[in-house]
Length: 565
Image (cartoon, rainbow, N blue to C red; front, side, top):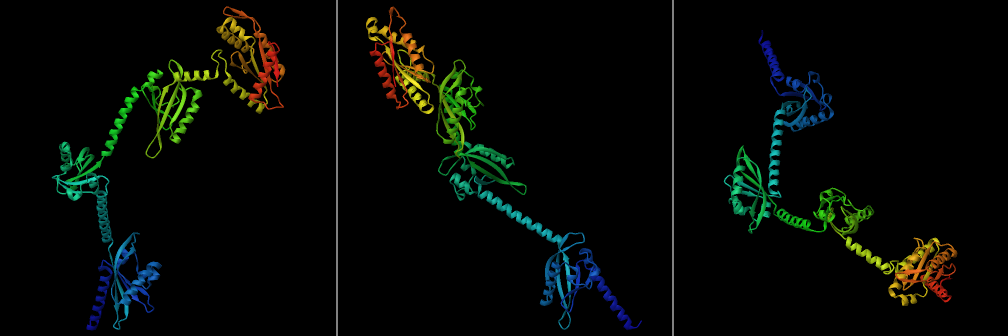
């Protein structure tokens, strides 16, 4: 073989070797892109790694970037390749590429332009190194750094801005840090406490207690307990304290003491306990009935006095409606007044009847005080009630005496005037007619003079009984004074009806009288006042007409009636 042939064979072998190295010997992906005359970039060569990791084949050889890739990806690479051509320098960038398995991987790209002797760029060699694992590791490391930083910030925020006082203490019990709340609770600034023993803050009587818990916490056991601290000005502070070990690399290096100031809560609790004790003393010894109602009017508490006042077991009332054992006629009014007190905040005052185990219905009076929480929402009603049966009976008697004659027991002038007004109102509204009769005993003075005033008083009572038997329940008989009486007849349509009543009274009175040992005969004179449709009918006119008619009956000899209109 001639030297020329040998030399040519060697050159061919060398090119094949280089191609084999590019194709199979380099693990990174290698692209050789030819720069066309019109400025496009054409695939000239790809190695085996491109086929393996990017999933491309030799079919792309001779095609442009835009022929092979999606538009957005092709435009991106086109700009990078142009940058290498124009800058005549290497361009390095990271990029994503899809693998044949469908996953997205990261690649580090190095673009190297190749030039002819005339400095014209003919090719660009792109070497793509897969850096997916490195990027994942870097992302994980960055995420870990961010989490660590976030954890530190959270810890610092939890420490600095905790509403409770937090003290960091080393294994020897020396204070190494404290947050802002510690100053608010104790009055000490952090710099005042650094380097001193934590027991300096504890009341002397509680030092042994906290030392015991400190030793337990060092051994990793979490405990929460109450303790008394002393402030900078010497005041006692009630504290709930929680000791938490500080663990670094699996070793306890100190203690966090988280201190919640409960001084005000303790004061409130003491006041509440004192108030509760006072309430219990009052409730257990009060003769009044003390009842607590919830928002819905359910009974939550009754005092022991229920047993003495109503003769019932107090437990029977708990959980019932507040109107339990209240007279049915009084329930509606009680419910209305309860609801009104809830909505207005004013005291609840009411009288009602409730059941006594032995005496039946008894009158009671209550006073309820609504209680609201700090948000002004109704919480409960405190009710005090007492038996007012005696007072009610007395009031009823006073009311009775105010409207009744003490001698005869029949209504008096005041009561009669009320009934007369009702009759006038009915006449004006419905046209219901009525009549007034004024009457007295004839010769009453001679009865008093002959038999005495006692017999005279009994005669007046007897007169009211005889007249009362001749009238209806809707009529009203009243004593005006002395032996003078007035009668209101309701619902009479004719004069004849009134005359018939007057005649029956005259007949009843003139029958023989026997009072004690006294026997006599007497009569009555009657004056009748009828409504006049042509004139105003008033109290004055009706009384005046009846009185004038009585005068006429008297002047005519008595034992008869006269009528005026």
